[in-house]
Image (cartoon, rainbow, N blue to C red; front, side, top):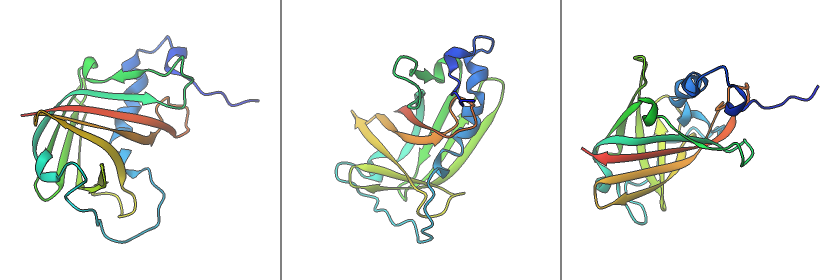
Length: 177
């Protein structure tokens, strides 16, 4: 029997929010997707090619938290906006590169995680405190008008609840508080 992937569009009995609740639980694991065995230190500079941690340090409030499952066919792949569903997210970035990310979901579920940030050229390298060096996740970043911070990149998680890890794009757009 052929193992078919389920899509969100194929689950009409469940609301999008219920279908994606496991995604949000998995969100706190987004920084744990790499399989590297490198046990070195987090060794990324605070200065990138175009931005530095000093440029993005401060408190941020997300006005868009979105996910897009890259494993779905183009006709079914859509960006799901969790902020439109009532989720809120904030991030504090210190000049040292330390960060704390808080995510609150409708219904009271909250996730908090922290770690270290640095740069690899133009990309932001993020390592969650629960991960080992070598398990960094890399994101494209942009800072507009000094007050809108955009972060996007491919992570791996079970976006469609089928038991398989999917390549998923995470989109964060945040306003400086």
